[in-house]
Length: 480
Image (tube, rainbow, N blue to C red; front, side, top):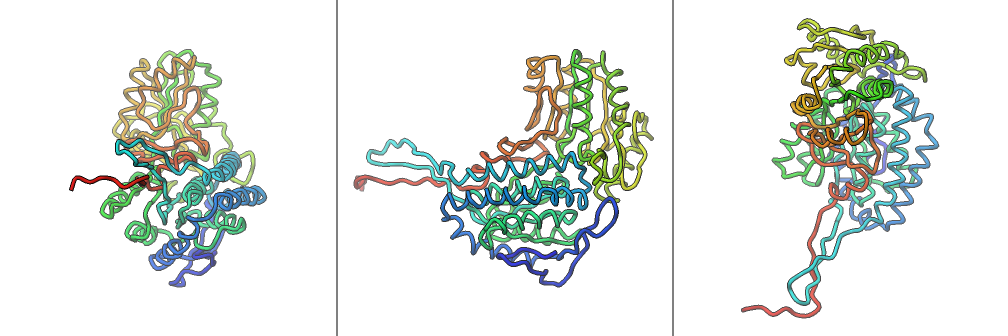
């Protein structure tokens, strides 16, 4: 599999390749070009060259490309779902969600070229007309993760391109073929050469691409979705270059269950929000706080449902828990569960690896000083805690360094809203679980979960520059 630079599918300049392998079977999905700084620099230069004509393209031209891209992606839907399973271990449930989201995103983004480009401003200077004008920034670096490869790669590029920018996309080394498929879709839709460029890299070599995107002066914006550790390092480097970043990072998301709630619904919602895509979604619930009168019954029913979730081949439509992405990820999950148990935690479901999978796991009595209690564990592991009341639930939820998603399940919406308004999170869902996204919504976290918001309507703030422009109807008098 080659890189896309300046409209051409080319090998890496160093001639190196690597194999993208299935986390389920270990089979080779694709042999991929292992690019580095030289390839990234070439892609940036191609994007810069394409920027002028693309930024001046007519709205209907951009709109037509996005609508054709959506049709092409829909036509290749079965192929997309199969690739997501093969390359990232994505089960059918989450693959359908990804495809639906990407199609909606492309079609909604088709309207962005017609969005208002600014506004008129009042001026106290007679004869002066003042405007705040939105202009595309130029080249955007887009760094996308593997866990929702189609959704998050599409989100990383759609807004910037629709607004007249050009993009260099760096997919994860765990999902390069998914990134290439998205690029193929745009090429088939007629996107001009250089508007979208794809640079791939070998395992452990992301820094070669990321550092060039950060340091190269032609790149004016970066958007990054990934871990808080990596996001912090990139933000520190970007700060030295005075380069703005949109960061969507990790989460340690709380789900609060209040007394009086419909327990059948609460269990259904919590199971989905905890274990979709085997917990490898930044929005997944990691901590469930349940008011004490219902804590025991909820925990028993939740654990029973978790234990019943089918584990295995992600290509099987019945599978709910597929493989985790790598051996390292599997060992990290196992180590953290073992640490918690060694310090007194009890396992209500799961708790033993079934390589390459880790079954849905539920723990209680987890002490606060083990990693599982305070850090994001990217897998199908959930901690349940009984709390005395909603005040304790809010206090414990807000004690986290993260602030991505939260959810409240309550007897009625008003009760849930009273709790929701006190939660320190960028996204809160009442009477739903934590895993929700729509292309038009402002998606972003607070605290260690990042800053800025993705979302079709909100991309304008992130991927355009605001320019103040004045014009006069007549000469202005000056005091000297």
